[in-house]
Image 1 (cartoon, rainbow, N blue to C red):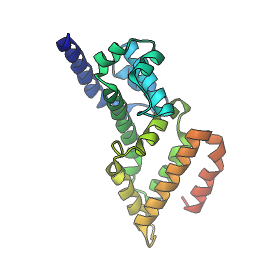
Image 2 (image 1 turned 45 degrees about the horizontal axis):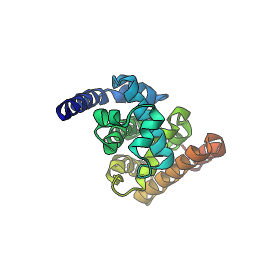
Image 3 (image 1 turned 30 degrees about the vertical axis):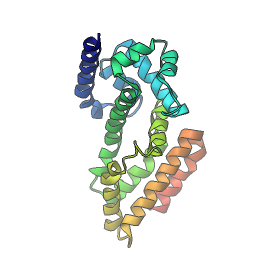
Length: 213
């Protein structure tokens, strides 16, 4: 029984690793649902991940039990262990998808050669989050505040590019400007995920005008 469970889990993990290489090609909207289909998951696996995403995002990872996820998904708790081994395995699956999504969103900024467009692209980013992805991003922001999941080094390519853009535009303190703008954008994204885009809409044009981009 243990061997069968481990084999099923490894097979599922192998499918996910192969499919994750393709996720950067997905369209901007509806990423999470499309990603699940691309990962060739069974209907029950999709239900488990969707339930985990919703509960982790709204109640927090530490406060969510596998029994609660099973109840939300309408499956047995044993099925979670069969496909994902543990609650940590569920989080890892979601984290892998999130990392690929972040890379997809940051790539047009990091590889942009026009410094003004670098700043413009970052400013525009939070104002175009698809509503279907709100839980997905709420979870990422929650995990940032949990030390064991926080990985600030993943932001380095973006911050380096922003600092380069500000330096190219003649700002005297480009690294500090990069940190400041990134903090502003993260705060706006947090507010949008909490209150909706309507409450923050005016800030987009304000920031674009402020930075003359």
